[in-house]
Structure formats: structure tokens, C-alpha cells
Image (cartoon, rainbow, N blue to C red; front, side):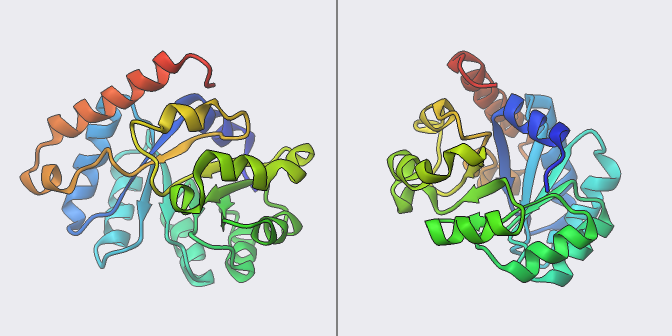
Length: 218
């Protein structure tokens, strides 16, 4: 489901910047600001009318960015984002129809899981990289450690999102089974509205520096 090279990039980076766009014209400046700060992977969530246009623009104008797409809820959407040029997709939940559509389209896909039952469905469909969501509300690192223990021998890797922040990021990344975390705090909407791309680049650089100083990841 996930090419080794994409997983290698995610492990090396440690943090994927997650954001949505209310205006399509903001997408490319955000992506470029994140790149300037050293973040080379994003998860653009499909939570607005401008999302697909923003995705298309990033894929066309910022080819050096590893482009992930979040909130993929239907089979048609999985096919559409692949056609636009997305590198991978994720969803908040485990929908077998969406996973199969992504597989058929050739879109590397990480379904959302929160329980052992979710995880077993994902495993049955061939997934070995999954989104753990909502991470903090579900119980955080201690819950993930306990929930994932029976499946450790299968080599499943996790992408926690939801309540991950600059304070707890390092602890998540110390878990051997966590490939990367979702950084939804990096792109602040007030900065986007003001067009302060320099500030967003600075926030990205701070996160990259934190991961580097953590030492154990990657």
C-alpha cells in the first residue's frame, strides 16, 4: 500500500504538516512556506470547497512537496485525488470501500484506526501504515502502545493525528512504531489570512529543529 520510498521520507521528516484552505490561492504559498522551513510533506484536508483546486495547484506548482490528502471519505474522492497527482491519501476512519478504491487507483493509502477491530480490518485489506486518530482523545501514547501490542510482530507503522502538538510530538516520535506525526498546529489560520508566509516558514523551521534535536527519530 505504501511505497518504501514514501515511508522512508515520512520517517526521516517525522512531521507532516496538516492544513485546510478556505481559498485556493493560499495553497501554493503555504506549501512553499513549509518547504522553506524544511517541511517536505503535507496533508491537505478536503474540508472546504477550495480544497481540490488548492490540491491541484500544489501538485502542479510545488512538485518537490510530498503531497498527502486527508479526509478522503468516498471511493470517488480517492480516485480523484490520485488523478490530480496526490502522492498518498489518508482518512479519519476505516472504510473498506475507500481502501479498495485507493488500491485500485494506485494511491498509497493510510486508513484511520482507533480500535483493534479497526486495525484488523485494515490489516486484512493489506494496510501496514495506518493513521491513529483521534490520538489524544483516544488515550495518546499509552493507549497506542497497548492497543498495538498484539500486532507488533506484523510491523504495522502508525501516523498519529489529533491532539498532537509541539509539547508531545517528541514523545510520539520516540515510539518505534510511529513513523511520523500529523502537525496541524504549524499552519495557523490567522497567519494564512494575513498572508504571513514568513511566519509559517519560521514555525515549520522550529518543528524541524525540534525533531532534529530529538535525536532518536529516523
